[in-house]
Image: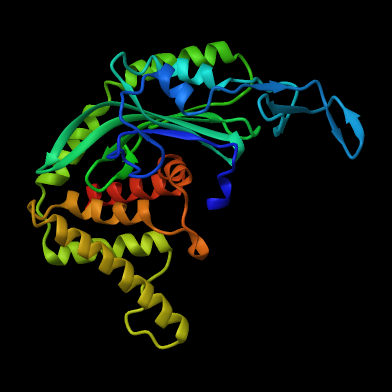
Length: 323
């Protein structure tokens, strides 16, 4: 996925101990105004009156053009409603009057963008700070909706997981670029204002897991269950074929990494289900992508918050809560 970062992408991160641990870092507090400027997301987009395909002009479709590079980022219908980067930053003002920006940036030449707001934090256990964030995602590729997602960052291991994890709870809001955008954005403002009251749910779940001791047998069973769920296959106990040998070795390596992380963190804290969850999600957030490609900080940031990393981390914690 490293190829998704282009010379027209940019990002800004607050302090060296931000959840991503890498990237272009600034030490000063990032307000929404300063983050918009320093992230390089101050450019705009325009919808054309039509597009030319194979030398033939048609007004049945529109192009979304990035104004500073003149690159077409997406092809859309005439009904598509443009939402500028600055409008999303203004929307973020409704999350909290004390929130600051942790990171902001784009990938794929500006086709996808993100903004991470930091509101507050709490200590799950010794030297284990969990912070409360709100992530906003949007894009100009004609496919990306505006998404609002509460999330939590564990500073020590820099893991990311959805904040609202209980079954039946709506943990994100999605706004499509059609219809009455003013009404949709107003609804988003109301939801953002309410989201700042949902942090206690996640905090209670973290506290529950942190106070639940985990035995060696339960830890082993949890790691095996999670691995098999994530990979969608049963670990061969007595491998015979070369394929089974590879599957077995891959599982042993992954679970071994989780176990090492768990043992290292249990030196400072009692062995708990919370440490077990974070041993797995630490690997999820930092692992290499397919075919050995290592993602850039910006691409990994987007995936951890709104992609496979986020979904996998949420499922890991849900499984721990259910055991």
